[in-house]
Image (tube, rainbow, N blue to C red; front, top):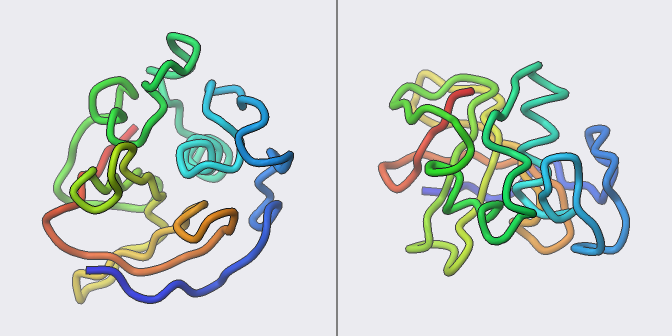
Length: 139
């Protein structure tokens, strides 16, 4: 389940620095700028002080797609999300690439508040998610 987006903003919202034309260069994790994976890598590193050991790797040849993070990122799959974890939605919902989001808080009602980039193209936002179609990674 997904709530409506809230706290919507343009590039630079939340301090995210890779604001050139979308997909025009790669960030320090070899993710294309202004994509969900670039946001997730930046937020987990700069907002939570965690290291994503699997990136950069292989010049970004597809391994940066969110759907590949459980394999290549070096994160451990967990069932109890906490702030600083990465939530991955698979290709059954977002075809081809999947989608990466960062867990910001977890409610006692089971809803998880996430921050993300590019759920709506080119926009930073937050929303609430819950359900079994989500993989949580801890770094």
